[in-house]
Image (cartoon, rainbow, N blue to C red; front, side):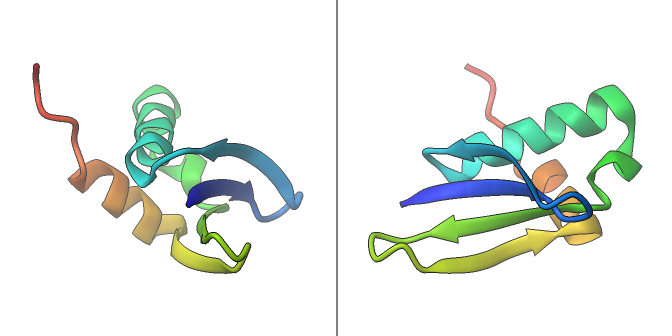
Length: 74
């Protein structure tokens, strides 16, 4: 299973990640660097073994998910 982060206005693939947490870490970093509005046009998809895509979250909901899912301190 992989996770894909897409920019919806340009239809560009931002990145492909081995886990949802890895993708959300990228989103969280973008929010911390550029502000929450930077993810307004981002879409996170999950690709299963049969190459079927399922929407995980988009825009504001994606920002909420990324900010809620913080990595525990080591």
